[in-house]
Structure formats: C-alpha cells, structure tokens
Amino acid sequence: MEPRNSSSRFLALKISPISLPSRKPRKMSLKKKKLPLLKWLTLSTRLSRRKAFDAITSGKVKVNGTVISDVRTLIDPDGDTVTIGGKRVRKGLPAPIYILLHKPKGVVTSAEDPEGRTTVLDLVKKIKTPVFPVGRLDIMTQGLLLLTNDGPLANALLHPKYAILRTYHVKVKGKIPPKAYSLLKKGNLKLDGRTILPVEIKVLKSLEKNTWLSVTLREGRNREVRRIFEKLNLPVLNLIRVRFGPLTVKGLPPGQWRMLTDKEISRLKQVQQASGRGGKDGSHGA
Image (cartoon, rainbow, N blue to C red; front, side, top):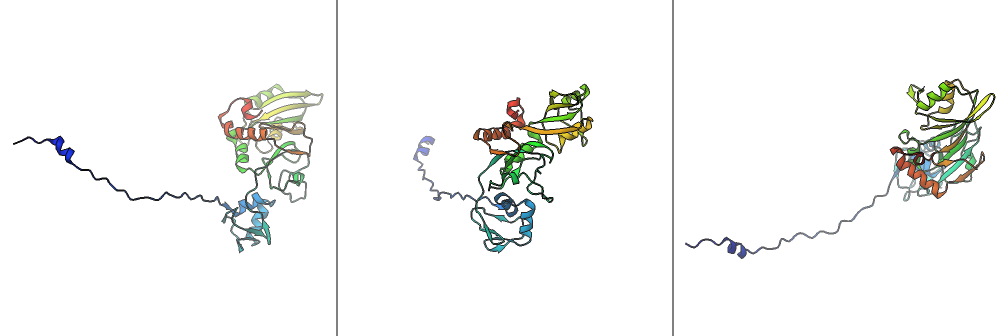
C-alpha cells in the first residue's frame, strides 16, 4: 500500500473564491444642529431671557406658522421660520462678537433694569448683534467688562477651575496693617464659609488718610473685593477693574468701548484651553 502523499492531496484541492454581496457606499448624514427655542431667541434677538420666555409662553412666537408655547421646543436656526408678534426673526446664528467696555459708575451690569437705570447694553446700542456681559461689576464699580455672544468661552472664563486673574485698583480708607497683608497673601480669610484663594496685593500710593492698592484675585465671587476689605475693617472708597485675563482697560475712557483685536481674541481662546493647567502669569494673562 502506497503511503498517502498529503502534499499532493492539498495541491489538488481547488479553492473557489468566496463571493461577497456588493455593498453600496454608506451615505453620511449630516444632522443640522438644533437649539431650544428659548436659547435661540436670546442669541438672535436683543430680548432678555425673561422677555423671550414670556413671549413664548404667552403665544406670541410662531415656528413655521404654528404657535409654539414650549420654550424647550427644538428648532433649526437655518431652516425654520420664526416670528414674534408677526415680525420675522433673522435665520441662522450671529457670528461671534467680542466687545471690551469700560463700565462707568452708576451703570447696571444687566440686559435690562426694572428701575430704569442705564445698563451696560445701553452703552453699546450701536451693536445690533445681541450680546451679554461676562460676569458682573456692581453699580458703583467701574472698569473692564467683556461683552460677547460666545457662550462656551464666557462659561470657561467664569468657571472657578480656570482661575482667570482679575486685577483691581482699590482705594481704601486708612492704612493697611501688616496682618491684613499676611491674611490676603496666604488666603487665610473666609467669605461665606469658604477660604479665599491667595491674593496678590501691592501698594500703589499711600496718602495721609487713604491708600491705593493693586489687588489681583483668582476667582470672581459676588462683590468679593468690597467684602474682603469690609472684613478687614477697611472701607472701599473707589474700585476699578483694570484687567481681566489678557485684557486691559488701559487707554479706554469710562463709558467707551471697542472691539477686541484678533490677537486678544486668540489669547482669550488660549486662556480657555490652558488656564486649567496653571502656569506663569502670562498663561493667565496677568
């Protein structure tokens, strides 16, 4: 009996090609980004959030001819036709805009004021694109305020984890005792039960009865500068915010505003991306 030649057996095998069913190329569907009606109206009109909410819930808003009273209704900004009281709202989303305002005293940091006082938006009426202030300055504080319609950037700049530097020139009554310097520089002071972050502080001018200081904070709590010095029994007589991140109010008189330069916008975007990682003053814009 002849031994099997396994190699010859395998060579004799015929392998039939496997035929796979033909598949048509998959079409990628690009879904248009939809936004809640309330959010889109606040971005695309000069209505405050409250007024936009009231307009929708009172039945004054129509989408493609149908009255919509649910503020959460999703719409296509580019495709849907929206009207308020019969007046058509321009389609699409406005381009990002960035305004640096030197807010004067006596002006409210708000879109509107029930008491009829001048607001920061009244100072930029020439700008047709709806904007909002990034953070707040109280009515008696003057200085740098950023206005924009760029929500993600605004949220990043205000988020505590980014520790965006804010520099103020502060005039206080009296002299600064050494103990107060130590408390501020080490952050050994509490507001609302929470310890403040260390403060950079230096004397700009020491007068007989008052002192001008430069104070840099890494957070933006409500009326933080005034409350800090109240706690130290040093009443604030004048307060000016001169810097916010990479932006400075230098050369801009109170009540005036200007558009940010491309370089400033680029630096803000860098701050948004890099501030959480810490770094030198430059990374924070100080």
